[in-house]
Image 1 (cartoon, rainbow, N blue to C red):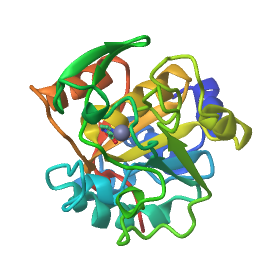
Image 2: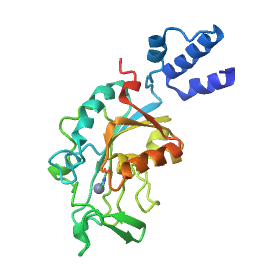
Image 3: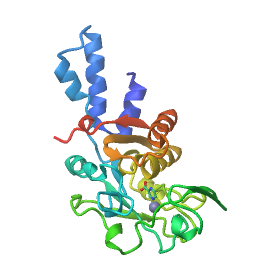
Image 4: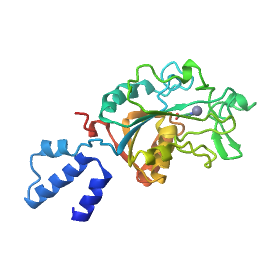
Length: 254
Ligand code: VGL
Ligand code: ZN
C-alpha cells in the first residue's frame, strides 16, 4: 500500500481493515505471512463511525406465522442481535403497505400470489396481503434487539407503488431520503442484513452501490423467498455490481 492509498483508506474508515492491510504489508516485507490464526483475526472488519448496519424488514410478516413467511426467516434474528452491538449506526426498515396495496394479489381480480403483472412503472410480482400499516404483522420481530437503532425507514406506503429498496421506490423515481441521511451523517460503508435476500435486501444493496456506498451483504444474516432461482440470481447480480458477500463471523464484534 502506498502513502496515497493509505491516506485514502484512513479517511474512508474501518480502521481494523487498514490495520490488516498494514500487517499484510509488513508480513510481505518480512517475507512471511506470520501466524495464520493471527492473520485471520486481524482481517476481521471492525465497524467504525463511517459504517452503518442496515436491517431490512425483520418483521412478523416475514417470519414463521407471518403473512409472507420467509423459510427460516426468524433465523436471522440471533445473528443480527450478535453483530448489531459492533455498530454505532443502525438503521431499520419496515415494509409498510396500505390496505389493498397494489402489490397484493387480492387487489388484482383473477390473479394469484406470485404471479407477475405489468404496472405503469413496470413488472410487479403479486404477493399475499402482508405488512399492512399498524398491524401486528407489520411490527418488528419482538426478539430483535437493536435499541441503538437511530432511524426506521418505512417503504411501500404509497398505495400504487411498491418499494423493495430502502433507497428508492419501484417507480425508480421517488427517493426515500435514506441516501441523504447517510451522506449527511458521513456514512460510507453499509452492511445489509435481513429479509428477504432476493427482494428487499438485494434491491437495497444494489441501490446502495448505485448511490456510491461501499456495500456488504451479510449472507448468514439474510434469508430468501426464492421464486424460480431468484436467490441465486440475486447473489450473481450483487456480485456483478460490486456488492461484497460476507458472513457475520467476518465482523469483529469483540
Ligand atoms: C419483501 C416481498 C414483498 C421483502 C417485501 O421484504 O423482501 N418481499 N414485500
Ligand atoms: Zn411488501
